[in-house]
Length: 126
Image (cartoon, rainbow, N blue to C red; front, side, top):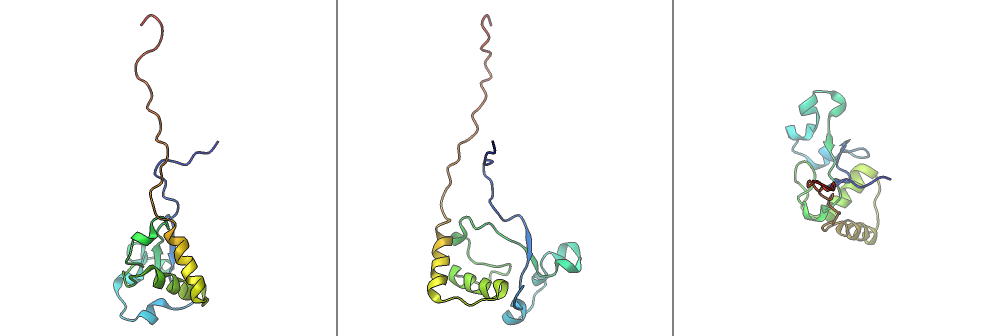
């Protein structure tokens, strides 16, 4: 049987390219060295504009968003990700629904802690 490890992160373990469907960096303007992303560490061209993706758990409490902190609202972050990563424009009501879903991923998760093993000998006669 598989058990959820204590304090598991649920996402946030990969590096992904920003701007799959549209050029976020040109649209934002004012390029910085940080915009190069993982490339700054690896010097591998395939790592340009590649960033570690955060977990969505508690995403509503982690503003500002993106590698440069340029987006201060979750609503705008969702709109930008739809534009630059997915390449679609959704009705405002759908964006509000997505934001509500993400806000619902906030809170504490109570996972059972592993039970401590008794260290006192229980063998008769001891």
